Amino acid sequence: MALTTQDVIGYYSLILGEKPEPMEVAYYLETFEDVPSLRQQLEFIANCRAGAISAGTHPAAAAQ
Image 1 (tube, helix red, strand yellow):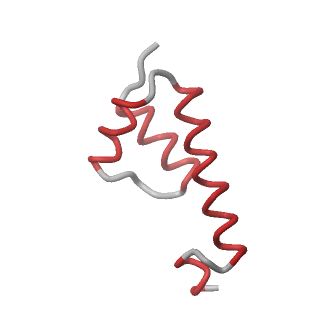
Image 2 (tube, one colour):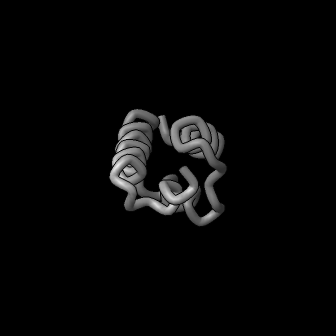
Image 3 (cartoon, one colour):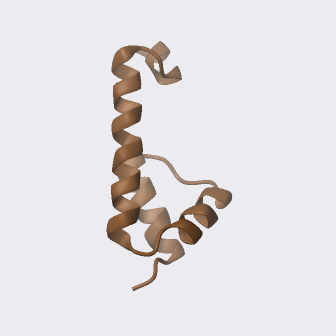
């Protein structure tokens, strides 16, 4: 089953904790074919961000 705009917005918000920009939604709709592949990519991004925050190399680390 193909991804929908609501799939992208919902999972992006759930996993990354923020609303995606319209161009990001378009990118994910064009790049990924299904929910499992989208979730895998978003979880990878979330893990990279978490690692960067804990290492102090992400802009959000300055806020802590």
